[in-house]
Image (cartoon, rainbow, N blue to C red; front, side, top):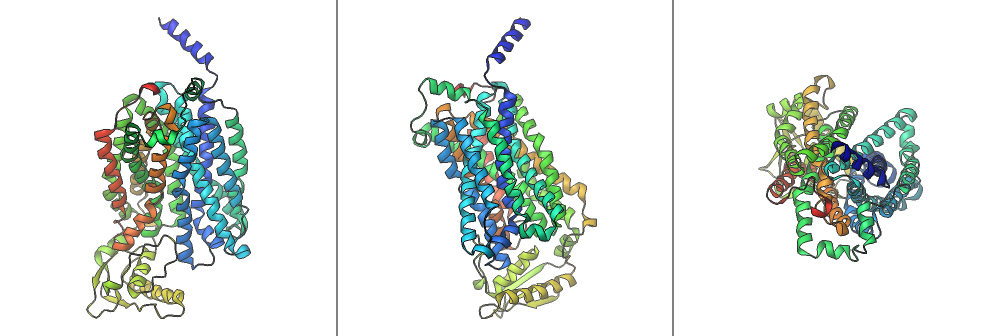
Length: 554
C-alpha cells in the first residue's frame, strides 16, 4: 500500500504543469520587491522632507513627509478593489504582473523627480501622484501573491507555503535598509542628501526586471484555470463580495477578527516602536536601525514557522496566541523597554516630573497630519517643545493664565508666539531655555549607549516579533480559506488592505498624537490595545477553523 501511495503521489506531481518551488519563489520575490519599493520611501522620510518640502519649516516638512508616507497606505484599499476585481475576472497571473509593473515604474520615477529647488510646488505634487500609484499597486499585490500560492499548495501545506509570502515583507524591508545603508556609506551623508538618495529608487528598475521575468514564466493558478474552463468566473465580483449577506459576514470577520489586530500588532512592532525608541527615549538612530535589522532578520523564518505550525494545530490558535501575547506585552513591555533603553530618563521623570501650567482653553490637540499648523499659543509651544524632546508631562491650569514649564523647583516662562515675527526663532529660543532647565533637573539629552541594557531591550523586542509573526504567518492561508475561488481576490484583498493600510498605516501618527494630547509617552499604546483586543474577541467567537480543508470545502 505504501508503495502504491508513493507511486500515485509521484504521478500526481509529474502531472502538475508547475513547480511549487517556482511558484513560491516567483511570488515571494515579486512581493518582496514591492515591499522594498514601499519601504524605501518610509526609510528616507527625513531626506524626502528636505528635498521635496523645502518650502515648509523643518518640523512641518517632516510631518508632511510622514503624511505622504501615509498616502500610500490610504490608497491601498482602492488598489484592492481595482485589482481584486481584475484578478477574479481576468486571472491571478495577469493581475500581479500589472501590480508589480505599476509599483516598479512609480518607484523608478521617484528617483527621477525634480526637487523643490528645481521645480517648486510641482515637485511635491508629482511625488504625491507617484505615492498614490505605489499604494494602489500594493493594494493589488498581496492578495494576488497569497492567493496564487495558496491555490497551488497542497491542502495540508498551505500555511507553510503562504508563510513565504508573509516573510516577503521582511525581505523587502531588509533590502531597503541595506541598500540605503550601503549608498550612504559609499557616498557620505552630504552627497547622499544632495543626489545619492535617488540611487535606492533607481535600483528598483533592476529588481522590477527580475520580478517580471520570473512571473512571466508562471502559469495561471489551477483553481482559477478550472473555474474559467467551466465558465464559472464572477461577472460582478464586487457585488458578490459585498452585497450578499454570507460574503459580507465573512469580510467583516476577516477585518474585525484578523486584520485589525494585524494592523495594530505588526505596525506597532516594526514602525511605532522606532518612533518610541528614538523620539520618546532618545536612542541614537544608528542603534535603533541596528535593532530593527535584527528584528527583521529574526522575523523572516518565523513567518514560515508559524505558517507551518498552523498546518499542524490550526490557524485560529496560532493567530489568537499572537494577539494575546501582544496584549500581554504592550504596557509592561514598553515600560521594560524604557527602563532598559534610557534609565536616566525614567529616573528623572520619577524624581522630578515635568509640569505645564497654562491657560487650558488655549491648548490644542497637537494633531497635525498635514504639517501646516503653526501652533502659536503659549500652551502649544510649551507642549510641542516637550514632545520634540520626548519628555512626558502633565498639565494643570495656571492661576494667572500664564504658561510655564516646571521641572522640579525650576520654571521656564513660555510666551505665546501669536505676535512674534519669526515664530521659528521664537520656538528655538524657548527650546534652548527648556533644555537648560531639563539638563539641570537631570534629564539626559539622549540615551547613553553604555547604559542601555541590551539583553533586556532585545528580549522584549523579539517577544513582540514573535507576537507579530504568530499572527501574520498563518494569516494568508486563513484569509484565502475564508472565501470561494470566484470572488476570493476581491473579498480577501479589501479587508486586508483596510486593516493594514488604515489601522496599521495610521497607527504611528495617531499613537503619537495621543502622546502629544496627554503628555504621557505610553498613551499611544491604547490605539494598538483597542484594535488587538477587538480582534481577539471576534476571533474567539466567530472565526472558524479551516486548516487542511480543500479550498472548495472551507
